[in-house]
Length: 260
Image: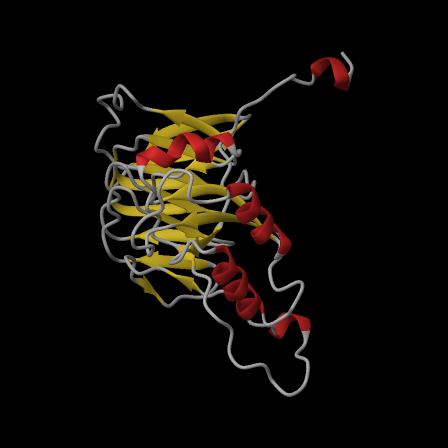
């Protein structure tokens, strides 16, 4: 059989996309345009075509139906190489018009996001490309212990609705990962506590990544995009027990960990 004959016409895998969050406190177009111009300090490649969430949480009052020219607003962000893909923290009355412009509604309050904050005063000479100011990641609800780049350690419980992403490294959690939360790592995920939310290891395609938990109760597990859900719960011989998950022959191998 040739490669073309063996190729599947469609596969669905879990994928992780990290987006910046634009916190919008005023819906006036001119003010937003001025704020973006000030933010980027006239640097055309300040952003690099990042996916963008338009977050209206700071706006008071929240926008009303028909108040925002979405076509113009989307074009404004794209002119600064920010690509709006979703909107969060808006009234339900706006959802139909938002979807009509090709944007999704994000109902998840992530714990790790990028805030668009003004850059420091420009230096006298043009900085090197890698030294240009960039938005700074913030994790207000997560306390991470300083570790080498190969590991990110979280010592606080992960609440429902939170998302933690360990980019380019392993993720170690020493407290519970609660239902409705999501933990993601480009490497392996180690949970020294109950794992009840979603766990996605090898998010950047690392098929050698693994998931470990001392008490496995996850809603969904995924390695390198291959996933399995547990809507009806875990098998009795594995539920609440130490478990490791790895990828073998494009299938998830789930096995107990023998603690002696």
